[in-house]
Each structure stands twice: as structure tokens, then as C-alpha cells.
Amino acid sequence: MVKIRVPATSANMGAGFDTLGIALNLYNRIEVEEISSGLDIRVLNTADYIPLDERNLIYRAMLVVFKEVRYKPRGLRIVQNSEIPMTRGLGSSSACIIGGMLAANVIAGHPLPYSRIIELAAKMEGHPDNVGPALFGGFCVSLMADERTIVHSTKIRPHIKCAVMIPDYFVATRKSREVLPDSVPFRDAVFNISHASILQAALISGDVSQLRIGVQDRLHQPYRRNCIDGFDEIFERTYSAGSLGTYLSGSGPTVLSFLDGNYSSFKAEMENFFTKNSHKWTCKILDIDNVGAVVSETKR
Ligand code: HSE
Image (cartoon, rainbow, N blue to C red; front, side, top):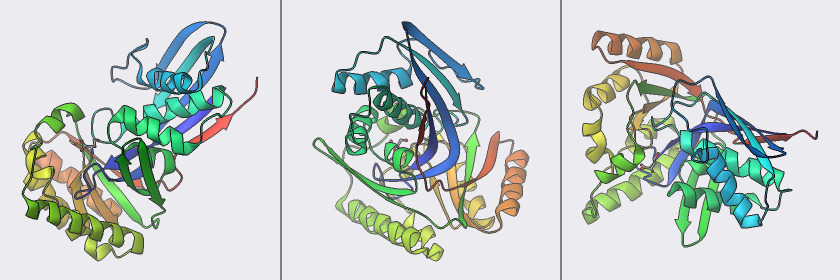
């Protein structure tokens, strides 16, 4: 039996479209076991629809690894227990992909290094900014070039926390990518390079005063803001409640604010704002997960 715990992730981080991501302490816990035959998939504690057959994402990710290493399992039992809300911009699909690939790699006898697993995972997901932190934890800078995927992970100081504000509706990444332009003005490209670079420097050095400027972005948030009801007002309110930097998490609709202290007053203020404005959003204060995916194996 293989047990895997994979963290939620928040990608883009404002200026770092398809490049920057961070792991958070909400988890998908997956147990996988090779059985004598068949496919037995169980999903615990979720109201979300998850297919229990060959369309299941964890299973499909396992098949990618089995194909790569030419391993044929007799049968598989997969049990998933996830705290990560689906299609909300918190990396639920990346957690399934990383969990499935790590489980398959253990079952096949550890043939693949993590450097290959991250390449397969980024290819399956289509971008590396969620799978990177899901596997390695912390704050990740990533790049896909030809067959290669490069991920650098850095641990972030524990006093920096993330408030995630999650609405009761979802936005599919595929749809949210359709609203993006095919090209952008040169000055917008330069704007994003400089802001993403400042964000990295600020997070790594712990200079939280520069997070607010570092999350500014011209590549995706201006195009996606219409998918989120009350976008500008919510962003403004996070700053008046003490956010150090607020951005649309991944392709949304979750909004994330960095905090250093005043965690509970921020949460109370935002919940009060959501209630008053009839927005059905929840606010959770999360730690940055500096560990990444954790694998434990028990022999039967
Ligand atoms: N970088 C991806 C996007 C993240 O913005 O489409 C999706 O979670």
C-alpha cells in the first residue's frame, strides 16, 4: 500500500503566469494498492463529482507512469480523500496528477527520478506552475522548454501566510485560458517580467513590503477579472483589511492575499464583507507548505 499526501497549490501569483506557484497546507490524501484484478476507486468526503472509472485523473496519471516504465499492474485500488476544492484555482488536478504518478512509481519499484516525474506531470497538466509546488513544496519558479521541465523550490518563512477566498462557483482552467489574448504589447511583457522578478526577490528575501507591487500583472488578470463577480471591490477590500499582496489564484476564481500577522482580523473582516454583499465566499488562512508531496509505503 502506498500513501501519498499532496498539497494544494496557487499558481501565477499575479505576474508569474504559467511560471510561479506556491504550495499550501490543504491536502489530497491518496492511498493506492495493487490488487489481483480490476479497478476499484473510492472517493471520501467530497460533494464534488469525481469519476470512479478509467476517466479518473489519479488513475490516468498512474497510467502515464506505467506506460513510461512498461509496468502492467494486475489491478488497482485507489482511495482519495481530498480537502482541496475542485476547479477553484487551488491545484486540485495537479494534486491528483502528482499523487497518481508518485503512487505508480512506487508500485513499479521506483524506476523514475523526480526530475522525470515533474516532466511527465507538467506535460499532462499543460503548464508547470501547479505541479511544481505540489511535488516540491514551498515557492516554485518553473519553466517548460521542449521536453524539459525545470523547477526551483525555495522555503518561505512561516510567518507569511495566505488567506484564500473561495467562492461557491467554479471557473474551469480551459475556459479561463480561452479569454486570454494571442499577443500582448511589448510594454506589458516587460511589465510582467519586472514585476514577477520583484515578487520572487521579495518572497525569497522576506521583504514583504514589495509583495503588493510584485503581484501586479498585465498578462491574465485584466482579461479574467470579468469571470469574477465583484473582482475590483474584493481586491480593494483585501488591501484595506491588511493584505500585503492580492492576486487571482491560478485561473481563479479563488483570490489569495499574503498576510504577515493580523490573520484572524483579516478573516473576520473579509467574511463580514462577503456576508454584507451577499457574496457566498469562504475565507481560510493557510500556511505555506514547505515540504511538498509526502510518500509512505507499507509492505503487505
Ligand atoms: N497558469 C495556469 C493558468 C494555472 O493561469 O491558466 C491554472 O491553474
